[in-house]
Image (cartoon, rainbow, N blue to C red; front, side):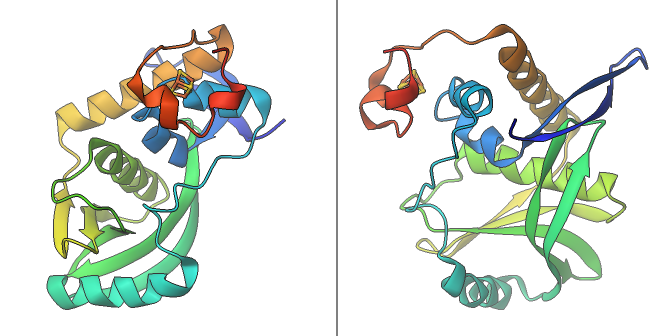
Length: 197
Ligand code: SF4
């Protein structure tokens, strides 16, 4: 079965055993909340969203480009992080130091001028995972290469609460199933052949 398993703790301090979910599924959740359920229940590999992800060979260059704007330096690359408390795992692409503070840096190749909510919560998840792993990051930054824009992600109480709700929702959907959602996005969905439609 795909995924990592571990003990989690609920808000009442009770411990129970369950699967950890990859952070990348948080991003996919915003395309359609059914995708995490499909990927985790079928063991189907996650489809790459090529227009969004920077090709591996270009990643270093784009990070350098972002650092020219931010004015910081790279502290670490490709850090594996996981948290049984959060029920999440993933790989942080880059940690940077700016003005003496550490930040998670994500770089994206999207044709948008404004920050996508999926990227906001994906990066926030990495921020929380970094903190859980003992890396004292202050927040996250996202660089949109095409727009040459930096977005700052702060772990505010409200945004963390929303993220925890999303993680909980995904965990519940793995257990209970998730009905098909009919919508405009289905026409361009990479998982359509696995959906019940
Ligand atoms: S086909 Fe439609 S309902 Fe199914 S996962 Fe894709 S967007 Fe969601």
